[in-house]
Length: 232
Length: 232
DNA sequence: GTCTATACCAGGATAGAC
DNA sequence: GTCTATCCTGGTATAGAC
Image (cartoon, rainbow over all chains, first blue to last red; front, side, top):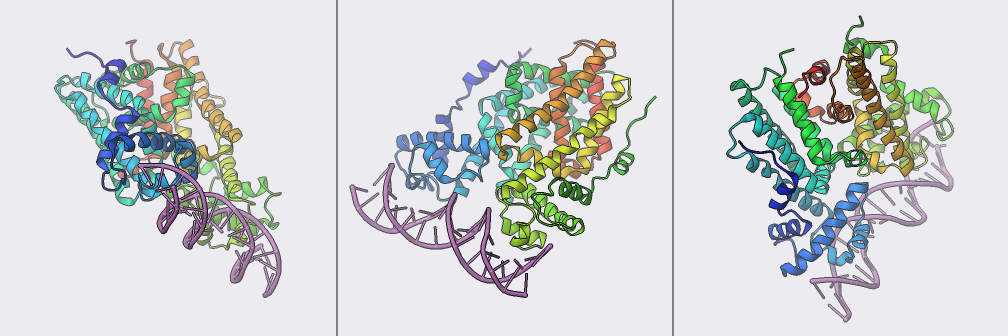
């Protein structure tokens, strides 16, 4: 039987450092980025993205001026504009890059048969992923309202997709008789809410010295206990 | 034995319409508001607050210009500035007003003895309150990061206070042997997260036609089932 | 108490030197 | 490829007429 995911193992498998993200972002935006040498571009994108995520997660993207960003990234205004053509485009680049990551979840449950184990895995993978990519997840959540209508729709679909994954697993579990009858749509919604809380309220869990693995174990326990309890 | 809270009953007891909120806000800010006649002031504050909450919940307070606000409220820029002395002060006025409401929770559990019922009541009261005051809760959550350091601290304390109420009830329940041994600190945190999801993701629950009472019943069931399940 | 007109500045954006 | 200097829009804020 498959084993639980460990955070360290998970982290090592994925390359999601700021440099990896910058390189991917560079390759996905070759037309809009005026810099041609990958080495130069990636080096500066690391600085820009770090600064942009820090500043806007602290006080909001709208409240971050490009002069702030320029100072924090150690690049002139002119240099910044060789990486994007407007502030809004910077927003969209970051947002798109955050989305790319989402399908990691699906990879994590490939080839697993037992619905109970599948559910554990998805919860663990989601939490571990958001632990590594905390800034990106927080940004995507908080700045979604600033996107254009069309991109907002994508964000919503992405949220509902995660829920659908959860719901499908629970449905399968019900059919196989492992899980009790319960409102799995609502269960999916609140699981999602609890997963999001992990990256939205970092300060709280850090202060209480709760690790991701501990939080993951707690969530799994809570949900399994609910889904396998005698009918109320 | 005490009965469950019904939403309609709850709603009728509290006077929390926009006019009530405006009147309270007026009385709490008599020095900064230049208008003296309560009737005039309240009438305009209703317009201002409605417009401000709508606009900033849609695209963020920072992104809402005072020209936008002026147009949406149907008042000139000059008139706006007789109600606050700066945009930042408007933010603080709204934020403070949102906080006032929080202690309604404590009122709801006065005189109840049974921890299980207490827990139900707090969950119901929190959800019903946030249902009536949706815009205010959403604003307070999303704009917390734009506050001055000191007010941010208050927002954090307020969040932790809600959790403490939950945790204390659960502790009492454990001592009385009604609830099993469980990590009640983490349980408190995720209950809070699920309560918040109700006003943060209105669109989701509206789309699925889930009412507050239904959501409340689900949450209570989930939590009670966890706290009374056999030890895992 | 409310409006219009205007001051003033911060912020986004770019041209052109290096 | 990067910087400095500058443009100019649109934002906050206020003075003064009504």
